[in-house]
Length: 125
Image (cartoon, rainbow, N blue to C red; front, side, top):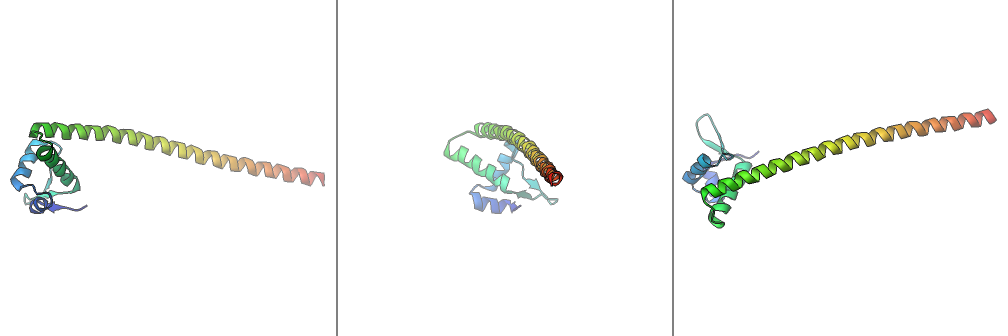
């Protein structure tokens, strides 16, 4: 995964480092990793949050509190959808396993039927 330093993030997003540090203190789900030296390292998830915050605050006119609440709400919705998608994935896996088992049993049954026909033909001859 790509990692960016605060200066690179400023160039990419147009958001000043002091603003990024402020947002970090105000938005609970926005906390870039810090190296041992204390330098902030941002990843693509952080960049997405920065761009979303920038849009909400500068374009839509949200306050920082409103933007924080919106980001939290969106994260909760994403989590809800993730759990639903995970449940669907589990169901799909179960159905796929069942289908595989049914196909195997069907092949076994066809094989037994073919053996029975062969035995009947041999008995007649």
